[in-house]
Image 1 (cartoon, rainbow, N blue to C red):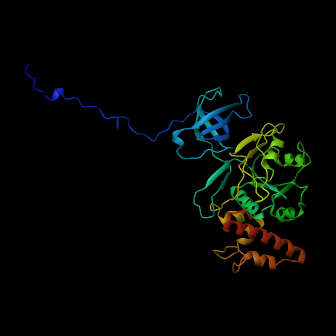
Image 2: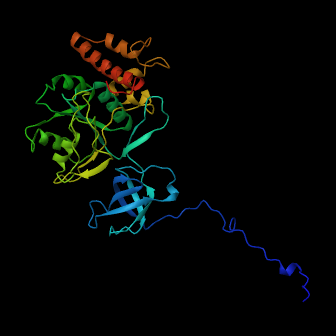
Image 3: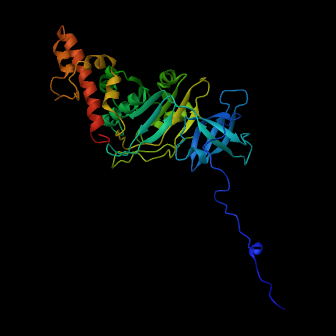
Amino acid sequence: MARRALDESDVRVRPSRRGTRPRTKTRPEHADADRALVTGVDRGRYTVLVDADGPDERVAVAMKARELGRERVVPGDRVDLVGDTSGSEGSLARIVRIVERSTVLRRTADDTDPVERVIVANADQLVVVTALADPEPRTRMIDRCVVAAYDAGMDVLLALTKADLADPAPLRALYEPIGVRVVVSSRTDEAAIEGLDEVREALAGRMSVLVGHSGVGKSTLVNALVPDALRAVGVVNDVTGRGRHTSTSAVALRVPGEPGTWVIDTPGVRSFGLAHVDPDHLLGAFADLAEVAEDCPRGCTHAADAPDCALDEWVEASPDDEARAARTARVDSFRRLLVSRSGSPEAG
């Protein structure tokens, strides 16, 4: 049988998949998205509270939509969800938008690391939990947390635990002059914490993030505030004087019986890098000193060895000894934090 000659009508061209759909930068508006609060993050899955504090409040699980790229979603974020937001077993929603954040608490691995790590969003108070003994308080770490909080526009609360083991007065004297509120608590037995009411009052109506070294009593405090939290409690190593990491991820918890009160518990930290902090932002946290510093020469570092610094002139111009002592303490406190910004991130 003779073979038929082929012509161009016999050639079939397979259409390419690439370029068949016009590319566009237009993204869906997701006008029907549900608003939710991110309460936990675990390996790419986000626990969210849909319609938080509303009549249809419910817990759901979500994943991040591809359109968000590498933008990080953290506890405290307000987000918009699409898909199955019912919260029923096996359901999975998509986070398509992160609502503009009011505050962002960041840290870096060290003071030279250019990569910022967002810890939590939308918290208005940083609670630095520190034991008065066992382990010993590390003021350089506290200073660094204060710097990070002031840079983020957050208030600072210093929660001193284990007051039955040491006097809190020295730390009060160190931090209250720079605007840090101090509360004190101690364990009276396995089930009770003395001073818990003062802590509750300081947290009332706010979203607070708790940070601190392992072993300082942070998880114990969280469990007392939120009995259903069941955060693991660690012990302090007798040799190193350091605690074992027990909390492995940040989680936002509502304090029962306190409307609008949330605590975000974070894993224990050993260092707090501040490469992202601009020293000028730190000065802004000291309104009185910022006004004085307007008379400083251009490029003034405001450090103790800075020539012609207006802060030193302000101290020298004190009207009496009492005012001089108060101004000196204020400037010294600011410069201590300034050194923390430029020094080693390791706890001291």
